[in-house]
Length: 120
Image (cartoon, rainbow, N blue to C red; front, side, top):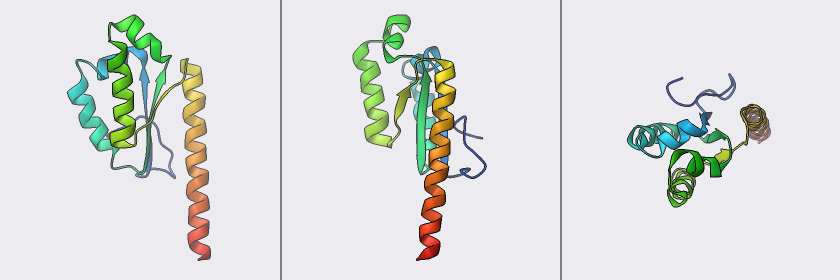
C-alpha cells in the first residue's frame, strides 16, 4: 500500500487508516511535516481515511517538546482541510481495536450503500 497502513480487501482504494506511535506523530507534525503533508494529500484520494495515534494527545507535547498549540492546530487542520480525523487511542492495543472497529463499520456502510443502490 503506497499510503496508509491498514485497509481491508473490500475497502482497497476506498478507505485507509494511517497508524502512528506518539513519537512518529510528533515527528510527522514537526521536522517531518513536509513529507507528512505529501502523505495527507495522497490520503485525500480515499473516500474514508483516518489517522490513529497509539497514545494520548498530551504525550505529544509532554514527551517531544512540541507546543500544545502546534499539536492541536495540526489535528484541527487535518480534520478541517482534509476530512482526516486524528484519533488518539491511548495504547497500541486500543489502537488496534479502534482500527479494526473502524474498518468493520466502513465495510458495513459500504455493504449497506451497495444494497441500497442495487434496490433502486
